[in-house]
Length: 237
Image (cartoon, rainbow, N blue to C red; front, top):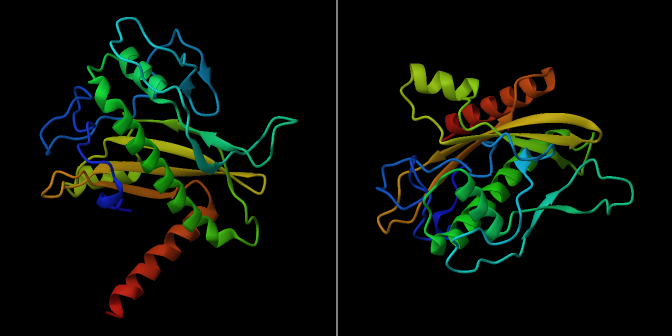
């Protein structure tokens, strides 16, 4: 899935492997800074992210918003008494900045709001792609929810490894595994994040490869169904 460049904030600051500062357009975007990296912190088992304080860090020269944006992604496996319609929340700009500082990124504080917008935008796009796959199973569940997720930026998916090793394709700059609740059944999805070729006006382009992990017969059938559908669609042109 290619994310519509017109909907992505301009002047993307996420185009560097070494830092979160702006870099040349041919550099790969940095992986999500919210991943694991410090074994001394406590982590939320649902999203594999640290319980970061939502407050300014030492040496911070200007304030950041503490507001958390609620996503469109429904939460699965709700604790007793919690609203069953509740949605996942994205980290506030302050928490996002805290994560970057914790991992040693040199980040212009004025870029954080844009980075958070892009982070949230990509996750919304990933969920939209998952819902397309879940339409194969509407008879089983018409209300899938996200149970938990984890980032694996240094672990190539089998598809990404094969394509980069044998076909010369670029490697993704990030990977997430999302576990979806399909009517009580946990289903794993793999999301590979790629940086696309920027537009002439420096608007960043991102490509997401979202698909069910090949760890069940059902997932294999879904993947084959999409492959054959794409083949016959191209053959009709």
